[in-house]
Length: 100
Image (cartoon, rainbow, N blue to C red; front, side, top):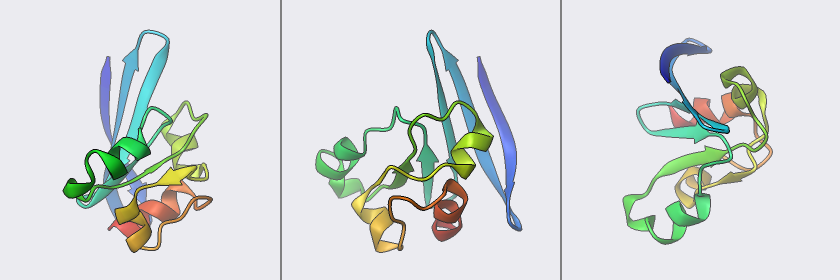
């Protein structure tokens, strides 16, 4: 099952997507510039193999819901996210605000 829902972050309405798969759930919240995602996101792949795409993204591990993703500290971020001041340890909400 795929769920798409609006999420308020400050004064902005962002898009949250939840994909229920066997034994796991993929969770992401996106802006027009980038996104945060659960532990399934491979930041190394984005930085190394897809670096030319300049993807702005951050990853949180151990989250199971959209609310947890928004509150969780980011475990890793892409090089492009770092250029916007997004760093590991920043919450999902803090990272998303920098992506707006």
